[in-house]
Picture 1: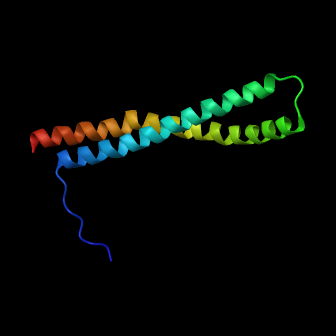
Picture 2: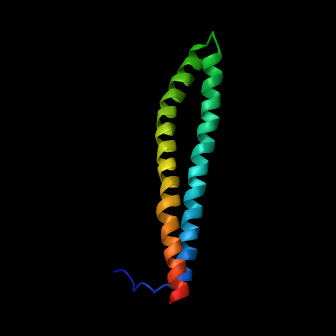
Picture 3: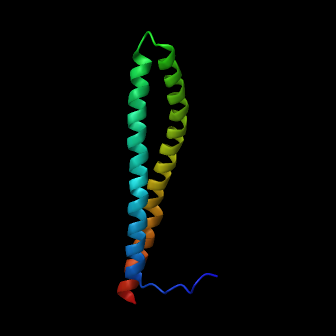
Length: 101
């Protein structure tokens, strides 16, 4: 059974939303950082003319991973767009109602 939820003031909601956003922003940033590092390795292997079997296998696995990373980048971008649009609007409304209420 879920306990009774406490009623939060607008200021508390804004603070919790800010913490939520900071965590999401960090996650999106990490996706970009990981992607950049993987793409650098892929580029290095791609540029090498004569690859060993191990390098070819590594390149193949990284290429598969790159597809997942590209999808993650697009998802992170959608998240960022939502933050600018939806999150900002909610924060402004909460801030405005805190001043009025």
